[in-house]
Image 1 (cartoon, rainbow, N blue to C red):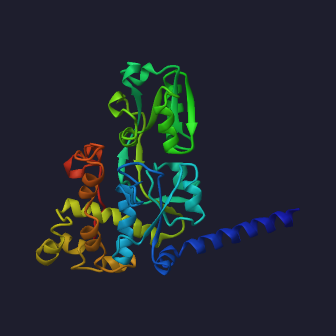
Image 2: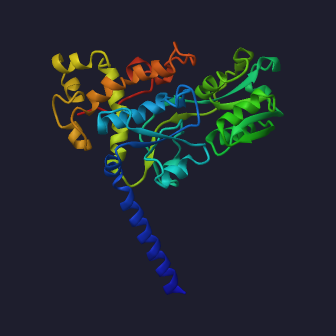
Length: 340
């Protein structure tokens, strides 16, 4: 029996090493097939959402497009796979997608036990509640005994349980796997309350029959740092996806955008700008891509501020202010690591 157990342990170790080795070549695999496989949501306006022609847009989509530009200098070299909250991690772990960019919260368990690496925070968020104005509720503390529509297999579901337990209140969960099922059930009156990240409330509210008939309650009951995810064991791919986001943030901080990027590359005397745009140093080479990687991303996708304003900002239907997602020197939490 002891020898048998040792044999099983040895085989498990071998399988682990083989899996790690298979994962270690994601960038090479992506280059060979010629596109990035990007796991996205099943439709969250402003973050990852297809139009009538099947063209995907949103902050999460722009991260994948940025990775494609870094590798191929072509933002169209992406194939999108819509994933439910329940199936998203399995799709990444199994290699069905190369990167998961799908309004996913960074937590300890996901970062460790699931074998995943979060590459940064694209959007700082927090969970909230939406109710119909007819319910005449002004605070989440008034929701004792309410039925609540929520996506299964999410931090949203866990936070909901924690909040009601901490406040000694009861509730009836009404759960669904797909986001569209959740919002449809709420709109049909199958529950009193809809809960998700506040950005998600703003996005899903647009799908309601009468958006103006609903109100988001003031309470924020959790921290929800949302960002792209890759598999453990592949540092080169992890580095690339991580620095795509930092390049977008660093560009905004130094005033480089899609309209002035060529001029800045030709005339700027700032050594930081020169490093960002590939005029000096081998930043791209260190990542395994062309030294013009960041220049190309900014020119074809934009800096972080442009991406934010285009997808979810005050002039979009979501009307989301920068708030916590402003740069660190503008009162927000977005703090890019230095490109040097």
